[in-house]
Image 1 (cartoon, one colour):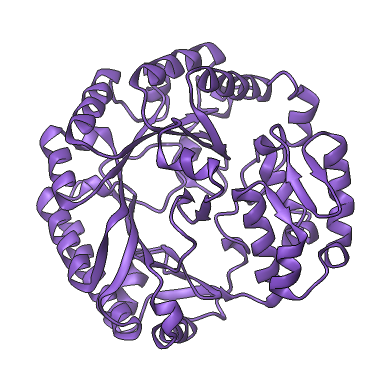
Image 2 (cartoon, rainbow, N blue to C red):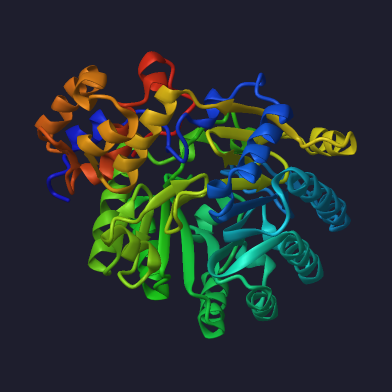
Length: 460
C-alpha cells in the first residue's frame, strides 16, 4: 500500500461509473419502451441457444421501517406491513406478464432479493414470494440465492426460515459499529446484535455471509473506523463490501439530514480507505476488486483466482454472464443486447401492470460499439486484463486501431504504474486494481465526451 501515494489518490479523486453495466444506467432513454423489452424476451424464448442458458433474477423489495440518512436506494418508508402484501400481488402479476413472453420453467442459477429491506416482509410473505417464483421458474440446485438483511429486522427463527426457503447467501447491513455514527445516520444496531446473528447464520450453514461497511459517514474518524474494522475482523464474515459514502444531497433527499460539517475531511476519508485496505489484507482477506473483499475459501475469491469473475447490476458475481430478469419497482434488467428499467414510483409501477403491460419505462438497445466497449470494460473490471486477439476475432476489428486514442490515454496510467501495455494486450497491475474504475473509464465513450460527471460517486 505504500506505493499508493496521496498524489495518486488525489489524481483519481474524481467521479466515475461503477460499471455494473456498460453503457451505464444514466444513458437509458424513454424511447426504449415495454414493446422493445417484450421483443427482447421473445427473441430469447425463440433462440434455442439463449433459452438453454440459465437466468439471473433480481427482485426489488422497497419497504423500510425507518430511514437511514445516507441511503441512495429506491425505498418506501412505512410501518404498515399490509403495503407489502399489495406489492407482492403486483409482483406476481408482473411475473405472469414476464413468463407470458419468456416462457415458463426457465432455469435460474442466481437470485437476489434487494431493497429497501427485503426482511421487512414477514416470514409468511417471504415464503409466498419464493413459492411464487418457484412456480414460474426452475431454481437450479447449487445456484446462488441471496438476500439483503437488516439486522434490526431478524432473529434466529427468521434466519432459520430463510435457510428453509433456499437462501444460501446473506448480506448483513452493518455500515459502522460506532454508536455516535449510528445515531448521526439514524441506524442504531448494537454490535452484540450483529455478532449473535452472524453466529446463528453460521450454525445454520449459510454458504457465504457478507457484511456491508461504509466509510466517509458523518462523525467517523480514522480512529473510530479502525475500531469498527477490528470488530469486523473478529466477526470474520466470508465477504466484506467496503463502500465510500457519496454525499449527493441534491439527488438524494434523505442525505439532506446529514450535516456537511460532520463529514470527515477528504484526507481523513483517504486515510480510512488506506487503513482499511491494510487491515483487511493483514486479516487474510483477498481484495476481489472495487469494494469487495473475501476470505480465500469463499467462492468470490476462488473465482478471482481462476479468472471467472463476472459483473452485473448487483456487483461482482461468480455466475456466468447471463440474462437478468428484474422484478419490482425501479429494478434494472438485461436481456440479450438490451437493458431495461421498471417505473421508479410505486404508483406508476402498479398503474402499468393494471393496464396489462410490463412496467418498463426506459432502457437501451446496445449498438455494436456499445457491445465492443462493454466486452473490453468488463474484461478489465473482472479479469484485470485484455487480450487484443480475442477482441479482434470476436468483433472483426483491430483493437490497436479501433482504440488508438484510448490506448494513448492509458500510456499515462502506465507511467503511473497502474497498467502494463504490450503488443498483445493490457494488464492491470496489482496497484492498478485499486483504481480499475479509472482504467475502465478510458474506454467509456460517453464519459469521455461528458465533462459533467457529478452524477457519479467518486472512484476512490
